[in-house]
Length: 157
Image 1 (spheres, rainbow, N blue to C red):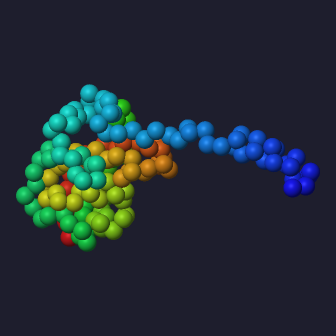
Image 2: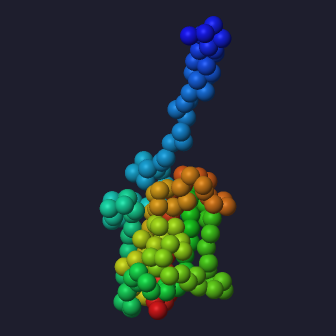
């Protein structure tokens, strides 16, 4: 090994050590460990948890057409964070929000939370970060946020 190379080895090792991981990856909150503002009225014991970690609760059971993948659905919704901050909603007179269910037009948790509802139904959905905006966040929604949606199913076509 040449002198020049031997001199470089300690420098390279020092640089690699300095640039090593600092293990400060953001902590991703779990729904079960989250404290929800009392105004949200969330008691996880009254919710159903699906296989992907999404929680949902029927507030009103609809009796109309079933929302299923491939159908155009129209909803009214309110999106909130665990502290009850409203980051998005579409109450009247805003138009009904329409999307193709299961086509990836909304975050995965919103698709999953709407699937299986019937027209006239109202559901509260708690979406883990991995099924929401994840590490990127969106607008007023910080990265790794748990999302709470109240969804009213208005139409299915």
